Image 1 (cartoon, rainbow, N blue to C red):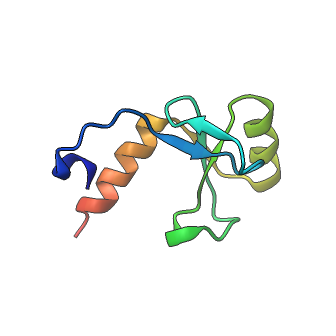
Image 2: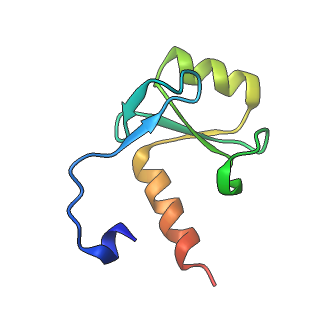
Length: 82
């Protein structure tokens, strides 16, 4: 939607899964995809601070850590899938 709207993106932020009141620049966060959680829209995707926070949640839930670039690619692939 953002690409199609032509609206320039100045900043993107995500809430930390561990501390939802803390916002992280989207391109600085890491993202965990896991089947262990029920998430909005069934994405299984959560945002985390890199380092100890991400490592501990990955150890607890399993899954795959991804970068912002990887998440954007996944989202685009999902959006254009038949």
